[in-house]
Image (cartoon, rainbow, N blue to C red):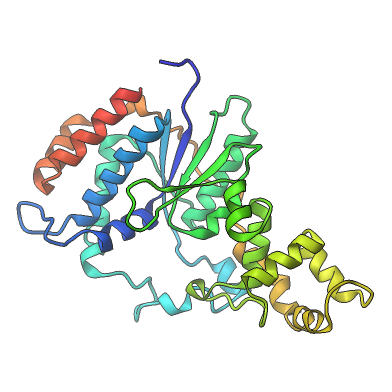
Length: 313
């Protein structure tokens, strides 16, 4: 086995268990008939990632707040369409019932579950990425597993930050690096992707974007002017290369563009606990893990995950 430590693997937990819930049949049940499709799919996904990428550490990043106040204050429509009648996030009842099981299983496994009050899992991931890149003893790569394109902004070849993004119909996720971003979106790196996303907007998150500026136009403007700030400066300069229509659209969206980066950019300094998530610590509580496996009918996926972690550590 190589002396070089394996990558740090950061899991966008909610993204993964939501995907598992909708991808797998609810006929996957515990002995008492309770659906456990999200739990099984989540565990199997982690096993595949550990087997394929051999990380030395794994952290399950958590939404302590799925709709943080600082983002809603900036753009009130942020995720507004996902609100349930009680003001929380609209989540299928059969999935909500499985989340505590995932929490219990992660604790028994010894895979740290890290959140931060007032922040989303995206911000936890952004903070852990920033810490890892700044550390002198960081792993060779940082891998971020997510189904959320917002996290493409973290891609950084020089820093060794790669996003793993699920592809429908394929077991292996797509590896998102800077070359992929250039080919797919025509942008140079993660920060350029964030600037493009700000201009384009995202209806799934309630972000309006700049009217009349789509993905291709945004990428073209960034290629010409470098950054979102450069585009805004160009809009204020009547001698710039912007067309009259582009200038008008950018200036009309000035209020939105003043606050949108606060919403789009993930935090890099959220108050997140320190926990390295060493795979050598799995399982942390073997007796509890056996009880959970029996109660929820998770013997097979848990054995596979424990074996996968042991093979790496």
